[in-house]
Length: 156
Image (cartoon, rainbow, N blue to C red):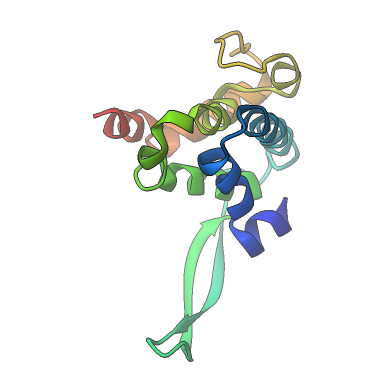
């Protein structure tokens, strides 16, 4: 998951979720990432709410390195992935509204999903158990990130 997100920003995943004409491929890809997000939430629960300093190179208009910049980012890979999904809510997702159901299910699975629930949930039916540790962690993170405001913004 680290390589998928760090090196490619999960570009292939989002390409399948937003561009692929095959609904079965979109669904299979979405189900895989729903499971990974639920699993990583538990693996990374000790660092889910922590931040780390990240240094990256800054490039000028000619593509040359012009310096370095430091920013804070979540320590947990699943939190970084989730935050990236949230940025796509206002940029890429609306342009592909007819195909973004599996994308929205990944966001839902992070917030309310547990490993067992993602195994039996292949549709967006609201039968996640909100009392599991995974659901409590995900919902707490969502509230911390201002999800109600962001989702309302997206809907409007």
